[in-house]
Image (cartoon, one colour):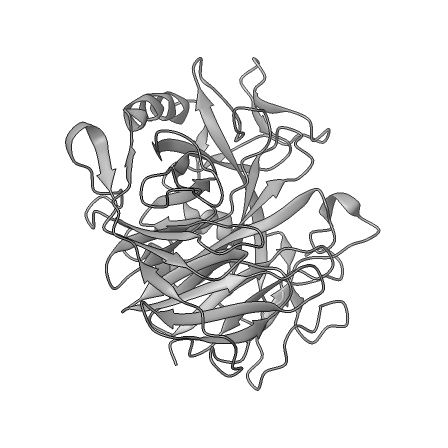
Length: 403
């Protein structure tokens, strides 16, 4: 237990539609998009197999069970108030202004982006906990890449969590932080837990896949400066004690332009991702600053493997595509024909949650400032999100989101 915390704040936001607003429009797009795994699962699979023989593996439940930070209760003075609601439930991250390296509530070194839950994992998720996973990217571009918070909220009165680092296995029995070609950190704007796979969007290219069945325990590093194999039989990860390796990826030809001049054929931007359990599909979409036209696309999931359904040559074809008239969309997901989209309106301003169906008018309600990715729990009807701004960031849920 770490001193007094700013717990990840769970905020129950009023059910979608309680505040009327101009109706968002989601229009069907007559287009098919394609990505391909390009042999990546074979390449990374061999590297992961080699590293399995050098590192201790840890089950998902072990990471949840070794939580070392406490979230802050919604009623604590250090936790932002969020949006009042009768059944308020939210949490804030551990906050420690006198302990900057561990100040999750206020740090500008890491920015939270994506969210998914054990309900997304379903069968094969490898956990008995009711848990959340939240992605953060290294905003200082120090080569750390992306970390994942394993949040155990089985007991809403005692929410605890721990960070683990995503890594990319390399040739020569080693691994490195997850970055993009220009050396900057992967943005990780959305994540989805499907079986034992963790899908993480790669803005320009597609989606990367990490394997929660191959979490590795790493050595302590008080200097917080080492990554990978030190040549002496030890592996480090900037003092994060667990790492999750990439095992594959699905990428497109070309890189995104926003907004797309030709939305039916131009490459996509990959800003966020969710899971539609009713159609067993991955939902990806585009953030466009200040302009409408972002595309939302469904990709088929193979129920047996948890991977995307591939055809000839490892290609995956989308099964549905749409465009939205909303701007600044940071997250989207769907279930039984209902779509939810989150929009940001600047630091300190309420965010927006749009609920709609294709070709129909929708409703808009307020959220805490800076909402990001979305995850829908079909069993409870709760919609989860996370907000990003330092000192204002919370994890919150919208109850009865389907109305």
